[in-house]
Image (cartoon, rainbow, N blue to C red; front, side, top):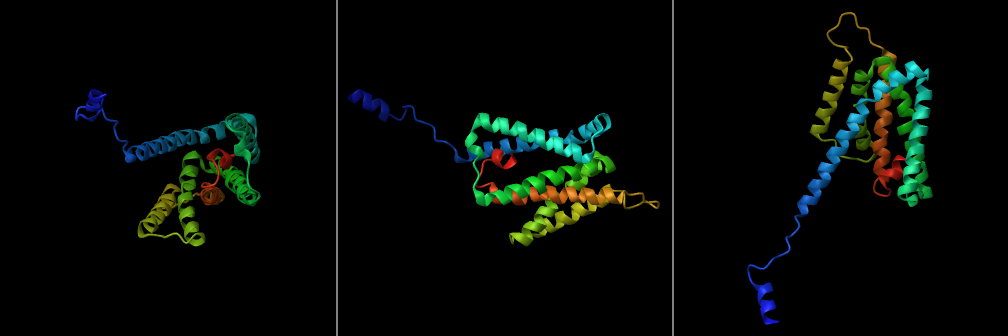
Length: 213
């Protein structure tokens, strides 16, 4: 018994390594970055599919948005029923937020996005839609009283200038800009930006699968 105690108390005995608290946060950050990059890769192909489906299938922008959302919802529903059906349980007071997200952030966004891609092309529509972060910053400042720092203000002006340059509004004598497409593109940015605002209310309460469905 004494020898056993000496072994465990000796300086050369095996010790359990302490877990670094920063390692878990780093792995979560890397996982988040990987998910964002993967989502961006998938999102980058959206314009190609929109052109092909409309051209070959004869669908309108609204029809394409309808079938896209319907099929996505069915796939998500099947996945949630397999993983955990309890994820479908939602409080009554949160229904307006979820309905608003579904109608505005998903439904109207996909309609605006499809029209913008068809009228402006995938590249320009994507650039304009990227201004969603600007919309989120401004609305969060107005609605949630979040700080609008100098860095955010500079980023907002830079995003606006980049959009104007990408749209070809500077340096051309004969300007031919699809104004309807530009406004629709801005509509896609606004509706997509609302996703973050609705998500801010729901993200701490529900699983991401529940919110997405």
